[in-house]
Length: 185
Image (cartoon, rainbow, N blue to C red; front, side, top):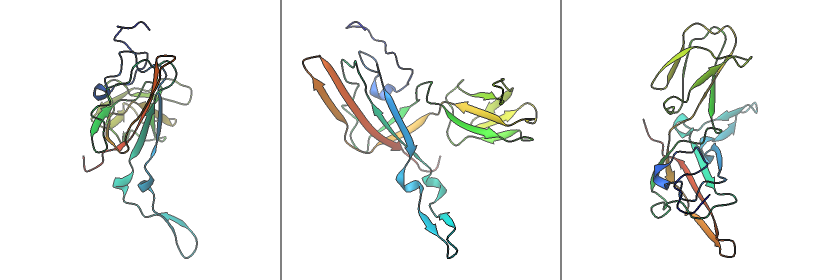
């Protein structure tokens, strides 16, 4: 990539980080449930129970740069407690399913416009409509249907960002740890 170019090879969307301008060459997104999503206890008969409130079913997202970064993204306002909105790159889809005989599924997260795909086990497209977070098949599922989509994530910075420079190669490395903001939507 030439200095002065304002494009980035990543398909991640995050205006708050201003990805581009020699950033986003080899990003890694590590997405997992937050630690507070589980409060595991056992009954007297040793059955495992998760006593955590379902509102804690939130995700953590760590974004890390890889090789070839020349400049950092806009980290100046990314201190713990600050918020950002992010749509993961196209390869980081979320998935849900509709069982045989079913017609609808309410997604847990708001889908990015135009990102939803519904497919059957043979990888054939299945017709659907979407309103908000609700995906509705045009006919009852005759086989299990997998729904893939890119979520729009509202995130809060939880840890200070890391930023390091390698002067001999004029490269930079960075990472930032965030968690879904939560609260009643």
